[in-house]
Length: 158
Image (cartoon, rainbow, N blue to C red):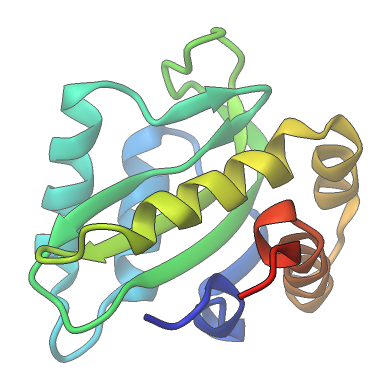
């Protein structure tokens, strides 16, 4: 399974998107992650179905929307929004940083490792502030790649 760093490609990173609701942000990421083998509507439905089970808002303005769907490999997107949106996060704080994971239906472990890495990145207040300070897509992607490389998960010997 490719690493998050390999999966976080430039077309899937967007800085300061205008999205006024949870539904709009999910629609946006479904569109940018869609492909000939991943239908936008199917992605949207799968992500919304997961949200109906409970918000993927972690707290501190961060959400990690994710779902399982029939696909060949994990897909990811990272989006910051211009204004935070109500995401029913556990702490009640509106969300402006969204890291999305689309996981193959038969995958059992890599998404758990990805969630652990992302949690480590987003738990650090300085990381969140730096990500929010980014002004362009490439800056946001470069910083997130750097932060992912610094996780203790990536520091462990193979």
